[in-house]
Image 1 (cartoon, rainbow over the protein chains, first blue to last red):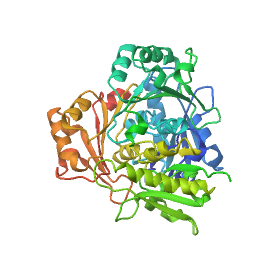
Image 2 (image 1 turned 30 degrees about the vertical axis):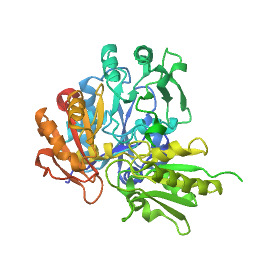
Image 3 (image 1 turned 180 degrees about the horizontal axis):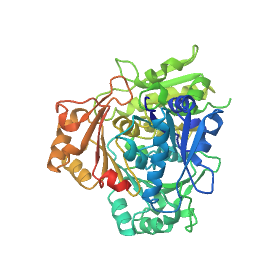
Length: 237
Length: 237
């Protein structure tokens, strides 16, 4: 029997309308849908596409713990085994990935386990990076700008070094690291240049100067955008 | 009369199916479509969406010279004036942008000229960055990785410094800068780690080790991906 094909589908940042036509087509063609899901809550990736799922599609919730840090190896092993079982039965599987599969996606951990044995096609999606920039109407990069995407999970010295050396900056995964990020930006004199975006493209979307955000906590899906390149209007002239 | 609204529509990397549902809806709702276009050739952005354009939509080709370096200021001024004329007549305008409007898009130069006076909504799109990674099945970034997007147009010393300091790297806009990039990667011992992607998601797509690409010339729409983070499979375990 011919093995099934695995599709890594970028589902975009959250607004269901930011799904691509290709992801929608494949989503509706496959007999099996899989998605990451916290242990005791609904799957965000599934919620993005829920309105387009069809009756009779088999669904596989891959239970990944949502606590900070990488889940134990066995969890990815088990998820890969569950997908492989479907593929071995000749069923095509669409694995939903919020944002883009290869841009900080846990998809990568499954891809590395399955890539040698199965045919995998990756469908890129709109990332939170450009979704946040669009929501804030904040130009990310132009012409010769270098863009640095920096996880706030780095330790404070690394975070400082990376931001100090960058010009256009997106600091992602703020969560409980937002106070640390604020300290770093304060030291660099950049706090007033930082725009904070939370839940971009969702009804709960929030945009604010980072300096105005309570430093206690931010959701995991939040980002700070900082652009220290020459003044935009000047640069455009 | 109420002024029209300007939509900056990300049209994605080239495959028409990588348009988002939102971009497609807006594209078909507006009376006026605008797009950048070289002086003596067809518009790439328009070609992506050509099959969905409707009869009776007004089209405005914004003539930007495609030679290296930024076009003269007057060209953006003239383009902004042409868009403003439509908006002042109360017509909504969709400005098509290949990839994402705020990710190295010439849209930014029009946005900065019009943002104060008109209501502008930006619809993010799939960037060439994640499209190239998907085409090459090359994980871009995971967990605490820092991603650096570096234009090959930088001078050789800057290019060297930026790449030397980065871990996950996308070097964009290769074009006539590919020989310079190869020299830099040779010096850094990274040439064999670099994957070359040209025309991602188009029928002309090409993926090759960068070391195997003739160093004379690459198209403008080409990219090299380099990941020097710990071995992926190991990292995933």
